[in-house]
Image 1 (tube, rainbow, N blue to C red):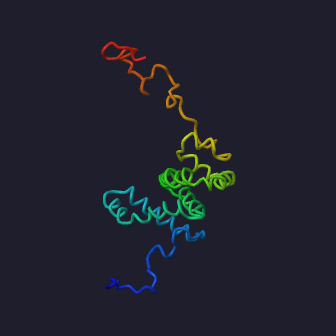
Image 2 (cartoon, rainbow, N blue to C red):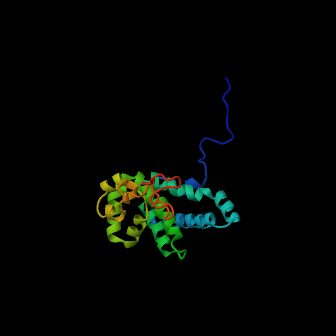
Image 3 (spheres, rainbow, N blue to C red):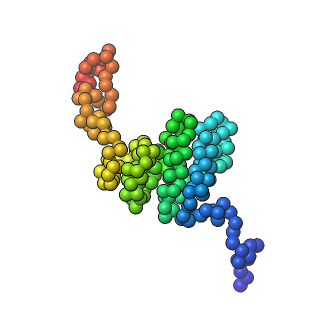
Length: 190
């Protein structure tokens, strides 16, 4: 029986972008900052015009690397430190910090329970961490299990969302003034 042979010898390692800083490898501050800068460049392209979005599509690995590192690295907090720092320093009216809080920070809070205490410690020590966490979305049940001060950084659900709000509202909508308390066909909206 003849075995299929590949053209690559078995003793030579593959060389590629993952070999520089593979997910799981600890990041120092310099490497984390370098990855965060690439992510910010990708983010700027993604928010730009058509040509920028096309270039962002070609460089999607810069975005995917962030997600992989945050969910799989043993310690992704140096990368989050760099992302939050860049978000605070950016002069883009908070657009990059919004992307970080609703992407990276939200993912870590929702999927990395092993980091909750360390994130709470960072929020106590650094106001920019508190600001970044404040903009993330997590459900009320998870928020109730987080260590202090994290639960205080998330707003309570609006009464309308819980179904205990204004009795005149139906399906989250208030009838128009023209409709008063009855709808178009004379039925009550209460």
